[in-house]
Amino acid sequence: MQRITRRTLLAGLAAGTGAVLLGGRAFADGPDISRPLLFHSPRLEPFVDDLPLLSRLDSSSYRIDAVSTMHSFHRDLPPGPALAYGDNTYGGPTLVAHRGQETSIEYRNRIDAHPFAVDFDTSLHGLSERHRTDVPTSMHLHGGVTPPEFDGNPEQISRPGQGFTYRFPNRQDATTLWYHDHAMAVTRLNAYAGLAGMYLLRDDHDTGLPGNPLGLPSGEFELDLVLQEKIVDSNGSQSIRSTPIVPQGRWEGGAVGDVGVVNGRIWPEARVARGLYRLRLLNAASFSIWDLHFSNGMPFWVIGMEGGLLDAPVPTTRVRLSPGERVDLLVDFAQLDADATVELRNSEPAAPQAAQIGAVLMPLFMRFRAESARGFTGPVPDRLRGGPGLPPVVGPIPAPQNVRNVSLSQPSEVRIPPSIMSLNNLMYHSTDIEMPRQGTVEQWNIVNATPDPHPIHLHLVHFRVLGRQAINTLAMCARQPQPPIGLKWTPDPDPYVVEPMRGPEPWETGYKDTVICDPNSVTRIVAYFPTADELGFDPDATFSREVHTFDPHRAGHGGHGDHTGHAGTVGTAGAAGTVGTVGTAGGDLQGYVWHCHILDHEDHDMMLKYRTVT
Image 1: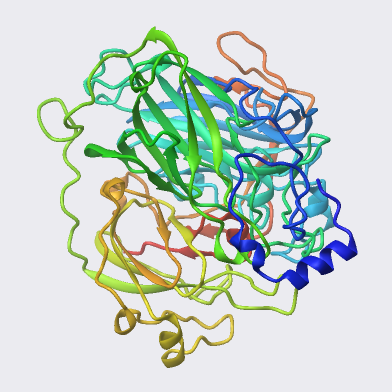
Image 2 (image 1 turned 90 degrees about the vertical axis):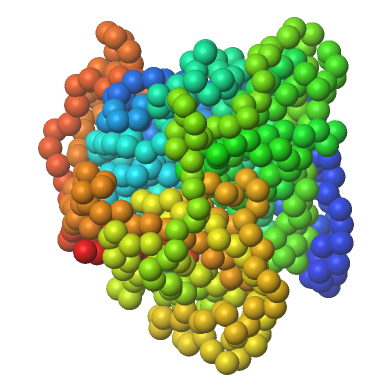
């Protein structure tokens, strides 16, 4: 990582925002005097590492341990500290589940050292020096329609020596979900360090097997791609910080990476047969939104997003993906000659506030090289929903029974950086929360009064994107002034829209759980809030904060068959190995959360609880 001297820092400050005019480079090329306010990765050669293939486990029960590891992100970097699930050195395996069959995960926190212990901001949400070594964790199945007690509430935490058994009912359509840490005020640190993995839900239509009813590629022709951005040091360590302006140990607001990471490797290469592939992409970054495309401009097809399959494949040459979003693609590598290559790239610039200190777009993720062998030769399906043997169509967006305005803003504190992040101008522990009624359809007008885009994620429900409109934020705020932080502020955007509503992007026409809210705009979504009878559980139930303790010297049984588990085991769960229960902070919990999926923003303080009431 580049060392920033006082002279260089002052020179950069004097330069102001001129660095935003710089274009992106194909890969990091070491210290850059034109961007002195940023840390940088060392020069690294792209495409020297093979794409790691994520292991897939298929069971109804697992034991997953969160562990401290050492991981190398590139051939020319030594292993550095990381976190992982199970036997991985970084990230987690892909878990396969089946609709209508419950998945049980016996989760255990075995973290003995955190890569970012010095980066914990002890001013956030009651964190203290203790948390640097007694690391809190909480597993969330992102996109899962999950009972509240198993949803990974940020206050229902497991510390080292503790664990919890999660039960996911899997009563939703086949789709790509993912599991990641969600602990209060340290989500960005835990997930960036490695606590994230994919979760594929199958059903009778989308079986993942050869000859599946939808005619989709399977087996070796279905690839899971976990995309991230990072800053790394020459010693192999990761940096959660992007700028020396913010002191270490203080919340930054969002670190922009300068190297692309796929499945734990920097700029890898994948060898592919010349045929059709199904690529499941996850934006598991902490900060950036990407506009993804292939370097030769070749077309591909979007077949699904977070809530499952679209009605029909959507041909396109680009797809915009924010943190937390997933996209299901069909790509025909028969378009390439044998031994030809094509790169997966990004064209979205850095967010405006990051650009002010010199951040530029991170343009590159990986390269595909076509081999001479022919691959999957089936056609791109005409339809994915509707008709014999297919799931029902998504259908039209229902008319809302209630409309509510909610807001995204960046109030200030006397601190560096001065901005915090807020929903409705409230802090997380506010009781002035949204309470939609079960069994109703609601339209949420998400008013983004900030200069940056924010991906907003609702737990429990999926929704439809109605559209977006730019607004005159200055006029809106002049007539509906934002009060001091802690007083609810949900301005009406309608008098201040400055354009007709733009409908959803072609790939956003299905069900979603995360949506990009563009700066100075209103994003309108429509969600149905299901009843307890429809869900098979009470979504408004209270639940205990209790977690289980276990004996770290008594591993129990894990793996598959008679395999004996150990500290990193992921596999079919056996003996629990627990020795009692211990409560965390007092009191019961209730409800779900909605939040920005820029993880720095979620941690401080762009997250609120909500309840679905009867």
